Amino acid sequence: MNLRNASLVGLTIAIIAIVTLVSRESLFASGVVAISVQVLAAMLMVWARLEFGRRSFHAGADPTEGGLVTSGPYRVLRHPIYAALLYFLWAGILSHLSPLNGILGVAATGGLIVRMVAEERLVAERYPEYRTYAARTKRVIPFVV
Image (tube, rainbow, N blue to C red; front, top):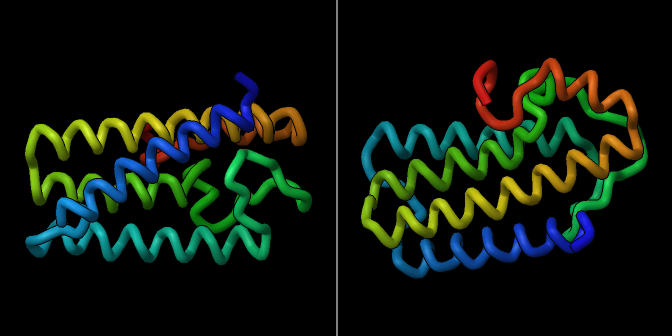
C-alpha cells in the first residue's frame, strides 16, 4: 500500500471511530477539567491552522508547496492539529469511560498515527530539512512523544 492510500485508510478509521463516539454521546467531555482540556485543544487546533496558513486540506497525505512551517505551535510539535484532535478525543473518552469507548479511542488514535507517519515520510521526501526538524520536535506531546 502506498503512503497516500495508507493515510486515507488511517483517516477513514479515525473518522468512523469519532462519528461512533459522537453517536454514543461520548466525544464531548463532562467535568471542568475535561472540558477545559477540550477548549484548550480547540484553541491549539485553531492556532496551528492559522499558523499553517491557507494550504488546503487533502484527504490523502500530500505535502503542500511553501516549505516547512516551524513557527507557532510547530516549534514544539510536528503535528499540533493531530495532537489537538487526540487531546480533545481522549478528554471526551475519559469523561465517558467504557470498554467500547476505549476501543474506539485506540482505533482513532491508531488511524491518526498511520496518517502522521505517512505524512512525515512524504514531507521528508519533498523537504529534506524535515529530518532535522523532526529530530528536535516531538509528534504530539511537547518534550515527550
